Image (cartoon, rainbow, N blue to C red; front, side, top):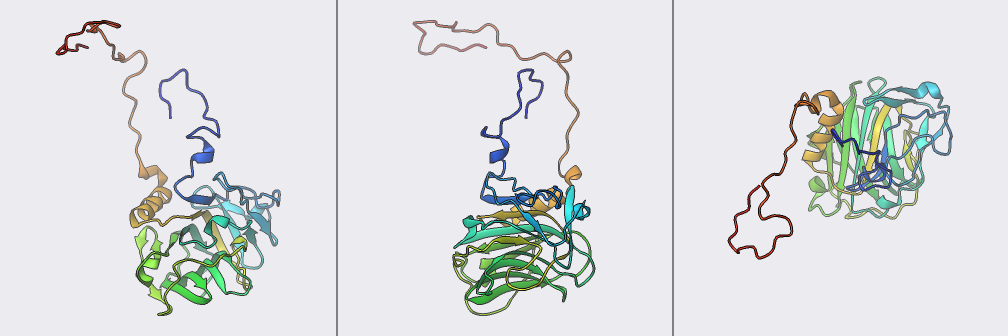
Length: 287
């Protein structure tokens, strides 16, 4: 950010603070889903990180499915056959740490919202299932099903973050869920230890549909993010507060002075003078 600098120039994409490096700190995919889902099927929704992994639309998606989301545009999934599919996000294959986050809104109580990656045979997966019985499932499977659940069944916009930490000492610290910025008391499905890493899985990442059955989303999704790091409670709360109400998350004060209304600091009476020699060891510096 530049202020009152006539020599400022646009930041190039490849600059240290250019758009290619905005999404650092473990982000491997960030989908704002602002694009027209009826656009070019080879890259309909863009990944804002430097990685590719563009989302391709499938089913009967049209331009009308680009609707108001939580932050700008979102996508309306019809509950029949709408979904996006990306290439394999290899950074989370065989992962020991990962975080998914998404804004979602059910069309009606009992509507499903699904996203993630997994094999067609249900043996290996990492996904989020907002289910038709009012439960929310954070699933991590490596041969056997390991999941954590809590309940939510309204039709408001909600922020959901699912965290996998393979180095956790127990189920409680291996699968962690945050809902609207708050940590959830989860119910764990099994006493079988949740794996320390997920199996290598070259399946594609899917938004709006499961890889291993016919379940599809019936509702709205926005701001889907995938990270190869463990996000903590402070991160979850900040991300929710920032995206839930951007206009109140920060304040901008009025400008203090203008070019003609304030005096820039100047250095005067410089001692020792420039290029001076034989300076006393205990010289006093004056500015």
